[in-house]
Length: 558
Image (cartoon, rainbow, N blue to C red; front, top):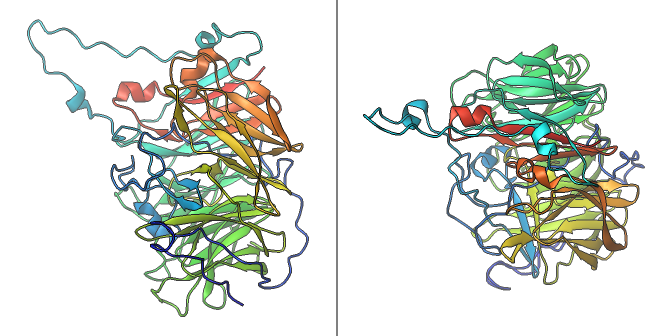
C-alpha cells in the first residue's frame, strides 16, 4: 500500500505548492507497546535534559527562501535540513530552520552577520609606527561573582561560568554535548574532550584526542558512557571513521573502532550517532553500524534487502530514518520510511512509509512520534506528520495564518537535536517565527490537537523575548525564555505552560545582570531540579585573546 501523492505541486497552489498531506494507512505490523519515556515525554534525560535552542533570530526577511549569505561553516544559507543523504547535508546551513506559514511550509536562512572567522595573529597585529596609540585591550568577560552583583529578588544566582580553554582553528569549531552524568558535565570539541563539576564548574578531567571530533550522540548511555567520532587524521577533509568510547565520570578512554568502507555510497565525511540503552548506532549514507557500548562488540551493519536505516533517535524509543532503493547503487531518488526498530538486532517493529519525493528531516518527538519531513527542489517544502504509537498516520498540523520556526543543531548531525517543538500524548507545541515588534524580536507558542491537527490555543512571549518549547514535564510544557537582545531589562529563564495554555509560569528566572552572558551562539539548554545550564554550540572569536576569554558554559540556580 502506498501513500497518495501530495495535493498540488509547485505552480498549482502558489509558488510553493501545498503542504504534505499523508493519509491514514497501516504499514507493516502493528507496533508493540512502547516503553514509557523519561518524565519529560522525551527519551530519558540526564540532568538538565537535552533540547537545543536556536541562535538569535536571523536578520533576513521571514517568509522568503534565501539564497545568499553563507553559514559559518561555509555552506549556503538555505534553512532547514536536507536529509536526502547524510553526505548531502554538509552543503547545508549550520542551523536548520523549519518555517510553516499559511498552508505553505518552507525554509529561510539565518545569518549571524559574521563570517565565522577570527583574524590570524599576523593579521590582527597593527604595524609599529612612531607615536602610534596602542590598541585597546579587550575587557575580560565577568565571572559569576560579578554577574551576581546586580541580581534581584526572585532571580536565580549564577552558580559558575566556564570560559574556553582550547585553542581552536581560525574558523571556529562546533561543540558536542554537553553530557551530564554523575555530577560531571562533559563536552568535546576540536581535539579535546573535557569534564567539569556540575556543582562549581571546576575542571575534573581533560582528554587530548589525536584528531578533530566530527560526531557524537545527543545523549550518553545510562551509566555515563559516550562514544564520539574522530577524523582519520588531521588533514582537512579527513573521513569521520574512528570511534572512541569515553567514561564521562573519569575521562578514561575505552574501546576504539574504525568504520568499514563498504562502497562509494557510504561516505564518511559526516555520520549521525544515537544511543539506545547499551547500543550505539552510527548512521551514514546507506547503512548503520551498531555497537555494544559496554565492550565495543559490533552487532550488525547492513540489513537484508534494499531498505537500510541511516539514523536513529537516542533514548528508550529508537525511531529510525530508512533509505529504500530499487537495487544496490541505485542513484534515483530513494523512498524513505520511518521505522521503530530494535537497535541491538535491526529488527523492525513497525513502518510508516513516507510519500515519494519526501525526506525525513528530524524527529521532534519519539513518543508520540512527530516527524519533520522535507521535499527538496527549487521551491522546497516542509511538513509535519503526527503518528500513532503503532506508526499509523494520525494527523497533520493545520497552521492557518501562523508561521512557525524550529531550530536544529549542526547540519550533518543527529536526528533528535531540535528546540522549538515538544509533544505529549494529546498536544504538539510549536514556537512561532519571531516577529520584529518595537525594535525587538518576539514570538509565541501554539498548541495543536494531535488528533485533528487544529490549533487549540496560542500564548505570546513577553515583549522583546522569545519562547522555545523544550519538553514535557508533569503534564506541562517547559520552555526556554530568551533574554532581550537589547540592553537587558530582564534575563532569560525556564517557563512552563499547562495543557490549557493560560498565563506563563516562571520555573527559574535567570538574572538580568547575566543577560549578555546568557546570549551564546546556538546554545544548548539543560534544566533539572531547579537548576539550568547554558552551553555554547560553537567556539569562535575575532582574536586568540577573545577566544580564550569566551564564555562557553554558564550555570544558574540556588
